[in-house]
Image (cartoon, rainbow, N blue to C red; front, side, top):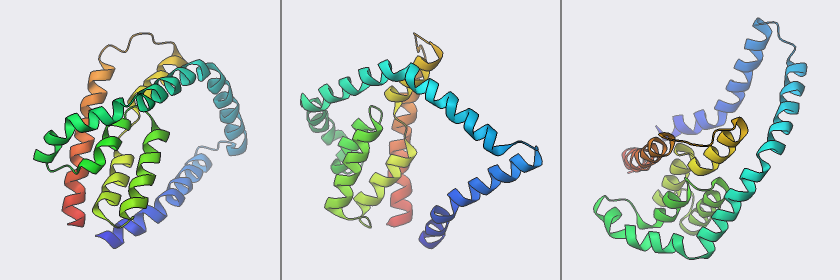
Length: 177
């Protein structure tokens, strides 16, 4: 199973690029012009969402530097112990919905500390890939299209994040234990 996952992780990007190129050839799309047009639109979008990005980065900095992340980790540790979720993963589980780069830094620390082939290393990488940066994504995408109220988005996204945490732990225990 692990050998198949290693092969799949190496080959998935070239396979996806090949599928996109073949699809473009079948549809007779000028791929270079489509790419340049998409890049220009992406640049305009990045300028439009810049205020939202600055706001979310400021909020992340305050959250981390105020000690709130460590406080949440200590509060949740007894609960996750009962659920057999390693306490080392809690900062990542808390940070992942807030910041992709912040959670990537936590994954780097976990992999450096415990090793890439450890259960913690594998679980942190799986969790990083299976969850989304909810608040960042909402700020960027909602800001790009002008949505002011998320209504049901945040509760649904948080439920999916919790499901991703449990699924990551379950899958890693199933595959790597």
